[in-house]
Amino acid sequence: MLINAYFATHFMLKIKPRLIYFILLVGWSTCVASQQYRMIKNKIIPNLIKEEAITALSHYPELKETYIEFKFKESLGKSMMKAQPKFFTLFRNRKNRKYIILMSRNFTLDGTSLDFNTIPKNVLIGWLGHELGHIMDYRERSSLDLTLFGIRYYFSGKHIREAERTADTFAVTHKMRPYILETKKYILEHVDLSDKYKDRIKKLYLSPDEILSIAVENTP
Image (cartoon, rainbow, N blue to C red):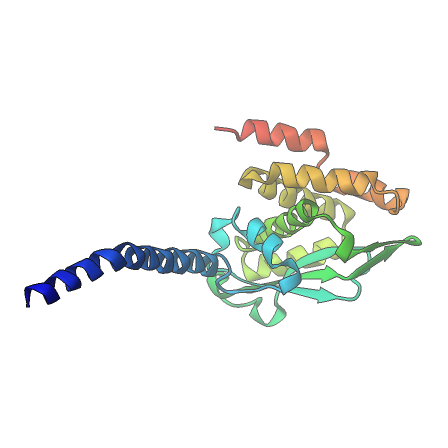
C-alpha cells in the first residue's frame, strides 16, 4: 500500500508541471481568441483584409458594439473606399444603425489604375482608419441629419472637403497618425496615379503638415 502511494505521488509530481503548462496554454489561447472576438464583434470582414481591419478597429474602441460590414466591389467610381450607413437601418435608433465600408478591387481613374492587392499593409490600415473616421462622424448624427449630410456630400464640393477632413481628424486623434501619413505619402508619390487625382486628394483631405499639427495638439 505504501509502495502504491509512493508511485502515485511520484507520478503526480512528474506530470504536474506538464499539466500546469497545458492548463496555462489553454487559458492563454482562450484569452487571445476572446480578445480577437471582441475586436471583430458585430463585424463582417473578408479574410483578405482581416488583419488590417482588426488593427484599424483597435484604434476605435467606441465602435466595438457597432455593426460594420467590409465589402468588396469591382468599382466605386472616383473612390477607392466608401463608408456609409446601410440604407434600411438609416432610420433606426443610432445605437442600432448598421454601416458598410465598400472597397474597390480595381480602382481606375483618368486612365490610371490601382490594384487593391498591391496596397502595402500600413497604407491599407490607414485607408481603413480614415473610413472608420467617417463612421465615427455618422454615429453621432440623427437620421435626418445623416440624410441631409448625404445630399450635401453629393452636390457640394465644399461639404465633401469638410467631411473628408473630419474623417482624417478622427483617425489622427485616435492615434493613427503614422498610418494616415503613410497613406497620404503613398497616394501623392504613386507613379501610377494621375496628377488630377493627386490634386483632388490635396484639395479635399488634410495635408501631412496639418496631420502633424493635429497630432501634436492631442498628445498628452
